[in-house]
Image 1 (cartoon, rainbow, N blue to C red):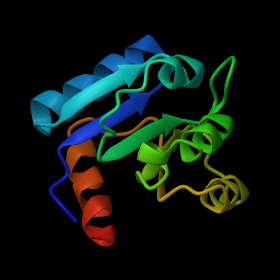
Image 2 (cartoon, one colour; image 1 turned 30 degrees about the vertical axis):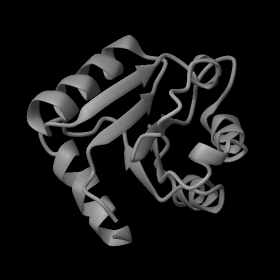
Image 3 (cartoon, rainbow, N blue to C red; image 1 turned 45 degrees about the vertical axis):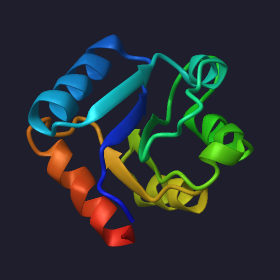
Image 4 (tube, helix red, strand yellow; image 1 turned 180 degrees about the horizontal axis):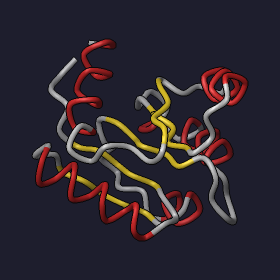
Length: 127
């Protein structure tokens, strides 16, 4: 697998979007594309799929699980690794998210300075 460079982030909270963008771009050196919700992302997906998607679980209009399912219906996105980002921390929540296709799950609040290395470690596990 190639180097992790381009990350799509789908998150409804503007503060979390900004913190994540700064973390991934400034600390991690990644190219980042962001959307404020699953419905918005699906309406505006770039033709060139990202290397990885960070997907919030709890969002209005279309939650992360529905967004995940819809992304998997699109040829260019069907194999893109998706990591859920959530404030839910119970073992059953983790199990449910992994059963719904998550490569991994990152718990909010996350440490912005550590997020890029965390994603690189996850990426290395599938390379």
